Image (cartoon, rainbow, N blue to C red):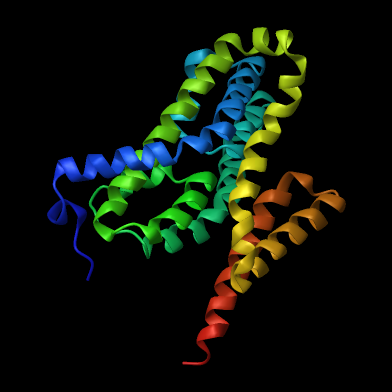
Length: 244
C-alpha cells in the first residue's frame, strides 16, 4: 500500500517539489495565457461581468466547458442541459484520473487538487511523474496544477478588463488565441502515439468527433468523441487481460 505524502516527506520537501512542478509547468502558459484572455473577452461580450468571468474560471476551470457555459447561458439554455453537456465534454477525465492515480501517492488533499487536473497538466504529469521519486510526486503536481490554475484566472481577468483593447490593437491576436490551447495539447499528446493502446484510443476519439461533426452533430462531437475514446481505452485494457 502506498504511504501518504504527509507521512513520508516534510513540508519543506513538498514545497521544494512544488516549485519544481511550477517551474516545469511554465511551458503550459504558452497555451493558457492566450486562451484565458480569449475566454475573459468572450465572457464579457456575452454579458458577464469581470467578477463573474473570474468566478467561472476559478470554480469551473474547464477550458472548453467554460466557453460552452457562457454561450449557452447567454442564449437562455436550460441549466440542466448546460450541466449535462459540461459533464459530457469532461468525460475524458475518466481516462485521466485512473492513469494518474497509479503514479501518485495517497493523500487526503486529492479531493481538492483534482480540480487542477486539466488536459495539459495531465499530459505533462504523465510524462514527468514516472521520472520523479514517489515522495516528490505530490508536491510536483501541487505546484504545476496551482500555477496553471492561478495563471488561468489572472488571464481571464485581464481578458475581461482589457481584451477588447488588445485585440483592437492586434487584430490577428484575436484570430489565433482560440487555437493556442488545442495546439499545445496536441504537441504534448503526440508522444503517446508510440503506445498502441493510447494510439487506438486517440484515433477513435478523432474519428468519432470528425464523423459527428460531418453529420451535423458538431455540438456534441467533442464530448461524445471523448467518451468513445475513453470506452476504447478501457475496452483494450480489458481485452488485454483476457478472460477471468
